[in-house]
Image 1 (cartoon, rainbow, N blue to C red):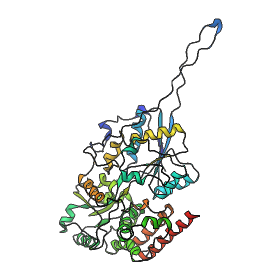
Image 2: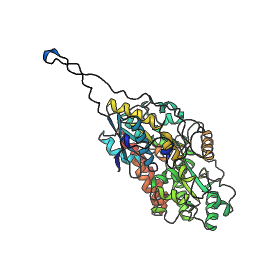
Image 3: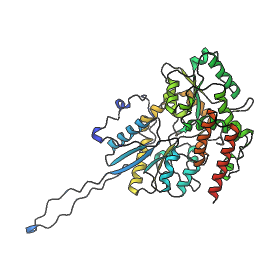
Image 4: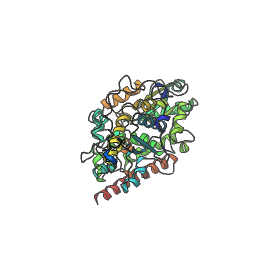
Length: 464
């Protein structure tokens, strides 16, 4: 885990256009203006009595010690931008210092669990909107952030996702999230593909045509199972299970979700077919998150199954004309069930002092206000604040596609990304299952049974 204190204010670069570096010039809407800054008490010492009753000179009040906030952040694709946000914030607020630390591993939850178990959460921490985090909020480990400007601007669907059963508003997401198929338009045209696949059978056929034309069809991050879960698993679950069971959330919670059947096996079966049809890159099981971004942006693969948060890296690749479509994980004749959820976001630790909690909320409002162009301009993800304005950086075709997906699910019943609905301990089990299926070490049927057992086991533990 890396950590550093960001540079002191006098060492900071200008926060204006020259500081934007490789980020696009367009910025995010600044509707989320900061809450008022912290006030430092200023007082004067009372004069004392000296010899001959002469007043002693007034002495200036000792400068208040700065607030030092520790932030534990999940930012695999924007760590440097997070440093720049902290640097810019500290220049504007020298009374607050930000000590950034970055999460490592395959998930937010594996970073959180040891700290939450000892009630030792940092002042600001990355979290996901799932039952595990909601339970932390209701246990009093996370503060309510409803008084931030950022919360007031959030989409209603995201406010609902970030409210615990006990009513605590416990975090602000980085954006509305989904996973998509990014594709190389030139490779598709050279392979004779002039129509995007509308179901999984057509997707396999498109992959075969790309391979016949000499292209590697698809990049998957086999060494970073988080993306296997966010992508193929989430869309497999949505279209094979959730589309047939409206009460799937309740069944996960009480441990009665049945996956030892054809629908459960189909979740993993479609992932396995990608390997069996030789659609994935040769180094798939060694490829990490950034490897697949580079493979697509450098024109070495025709498609990448990646998140909306990666649009900045994928839509502007080196000499690549990129397009995007919803992953067609539906069977022929079946309507596509979309996967819409929330990106990872930020929470504030309740155990921090009142002064630290106030400063942490102030930093969060800065992150989603004046600081947002620094990181959103690079990521070009979908902001969590209503319709994207003209000032938000990003591909309008991608934004339009996601808006269509949202309209197609007005009740908000579509599955979120996988970490939004599985128990935290089951996520770790799922990671191994996904890698096992993709590599051929685990059968789809066996993976489905193991996932069902983990969900049922976690429900039994929660009932005790």
